[in-house]
Each structure stands twice: as C-alpha cells, then as structure tokens.
Length: 126
Image (cartoon, rainbow, N blue to C red):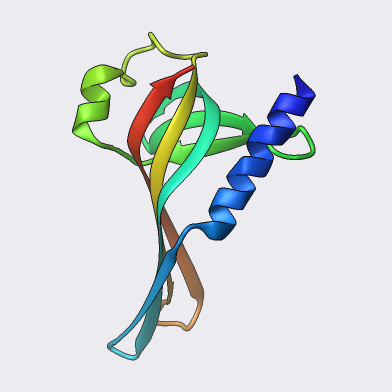
C-alpha cells in the first residue's frame, strides 16, 4: 500500500511542477497584489466532511503524514453527482481534479497577506 501512495504522490508532484501557472500583478491604492492560478491539478484523497469554511479531504504526503485539503468551491455539476453536503460520502476515496487561485498582497500596514481558493472541477469515486 505504501508503494501505491508513493506512486500517487510522485505523480501529483510531477503534475504540480509541469502544469502551467499564471501570475498576475496589480497595483491599487499603494497595495501590490499578485495571483497564482493553477488549473487541472489532481490529488487522490478521502472525503472527511463539510465545515462552514469548505469541503475537507485527507491525503498523505511523501513521509506518510496526513494532510487536510480544503476546497471552498465545488462546481454545481459535481455536487449534483456527489452530495458532499450530506454525510453519505464521508470516508470515501476520490480522485479530485481542481483549480487553485492564490492571491498574495500587502495590507495597508505593509503586512503580507495570502488567500487561497481551491475549486473542485471533477470528482471520481475510487
């Protein structure tokens, strides 16, 4: 089982490194902000349930440690197929295709600020 997890995580890392990322910068009211947009990312994870802040999935990193991935948005068609607002799919393993948008900015006090929005675009039950 460890070999399979290692292969899955290796594939995920290769995909993350090879997928195209777009970076944009804007200046507004003496505030600099940048966005990093990544589309078509894939991860294999187990559904852990819905909270007010998003849909949580558990995966393991290369060291075998569990990581929680939170997705704030799910496309409507995916929710029609898999009602993740119910408890029915808790504990179910999925192949998740998603987009990530990370916005980096500085607030009025010059402090760094980072907002990450993850959106599920496709789910496949494993």
